[in-house]
Length: 154
Image (cartoon, rainbow, N blue to C red; front, side):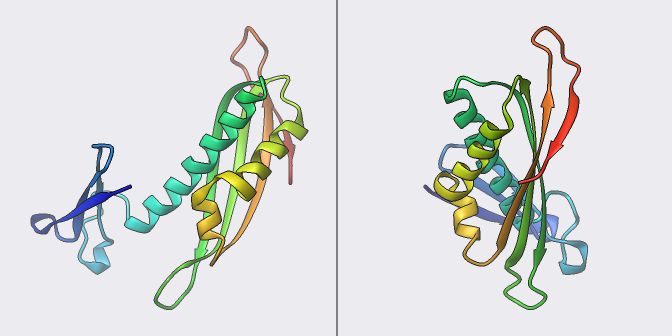
């Protein structure tokens, strides 16, 4: 895996990253650090990537288990160390998984497998941060798109 990052000096503290897969991502610093708030902060992209990594795993695991998953959202909250380096010290991942007849045990298993075995991002960040998870299962009728909520905690 590779990535090339270029500073965009005309935009203060903005950076453009070109990924090995050919995609572009812009990041910016906070105004108090010379940025212009034109794009996510670099550490926000780390957090977003972590959420996407684990969501990808959960959807893939549920699909491979032949579960009718229709949606997956992950709300990620975090805390960082007060001093440099300001590493993540706590990360909480709250999953909202929508589908038809999704068994809570299947969702719990998918989240656990992602957290313990497959998600490189959460496993890596788990070296400095306490990572916790919770989930909410929403049931969708096979023909309908109107979810109702049934919340569970892991």
